[in-house]
Image 1 (cartoon, helix red, strand yellow):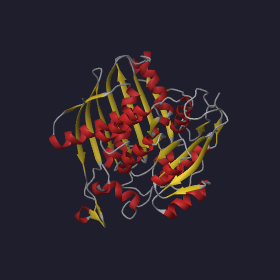
Image 2: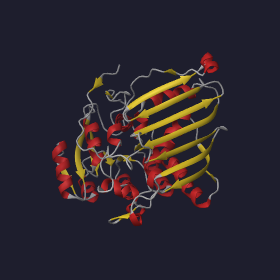
Image 3: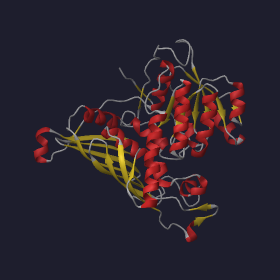
Image 4: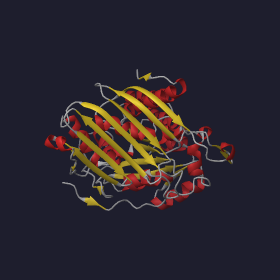
Length: 397
């Protein structure tokens, strides 16, 4: 039985992921964590707490701290950041006793079981490998790495170690996605024929999340030299996972086009070259014979943060929507196919990625979304980049 909790308190509004951490019931609340699973693994007994270190204390780290602290049996025992002032403020706000300015210092201390890696994208690879080598479980922000080769290296390392490795694909918290996938896999629409998926944001045209022209937290997302792969790397990883997971299919071939729009004189603001892609489209062949489109943009005026997936089968269709904190599920099934009638489908609350990670550590078995899943999604993004450069179809090996 699930008991509804109050959402964790939010403190810094940096990016839409900070909104999705409370979408697990589809209406803005968070379903309560299940009791500890007594399966052995990461901690020794029901009385032990899972001790967590948070690596990186920027905006998303506040969500990790709040959500993990809300789970029974979890203690956030340390924080790491290269900026001492930011680290001190973060640890004070969340009541974290142990502060470290390097991961090496934290590992030398060692009094923790797991690491939440909330560092910048390019830092995920080296720091995660260090944590794995030290025998720690890892919960990593997306993307797992900046390319598939690094992501697969991390995957193989965590699998060799026997530790739990999971990636925070936040939209997996959508109950509409989870229920819709169940319906597809149960055969309620027959064999999948066609898939349409889109992730629409508008922060390049609206100021609901701040002024991107003057705030570094947005500008770096537009600049390749600052580690950004643009909309493809930032939200593309979400919609590719959303489409593949919701349809129950893997991507087999991709033909992609990426577009960077003119946004400032000389395509530059201060130290930031505005050269990362703002929009992309993919024509996709899926395993099982289905085809479809996957697209995303930061320029969709009127759409703050919407993911929409339609899966069309031989006997019906299902639509899964996440729209700025709200989940919606609709279907056209049975006799409704003949009148093109769509009906709302009810769903139950689901556990969040944070809750699943804690359960996985307790059981000693990785749950989804796993490192391997994230590495496979990264392969799709790498092939999309290659396709845009070559103007040819790219096969997933």
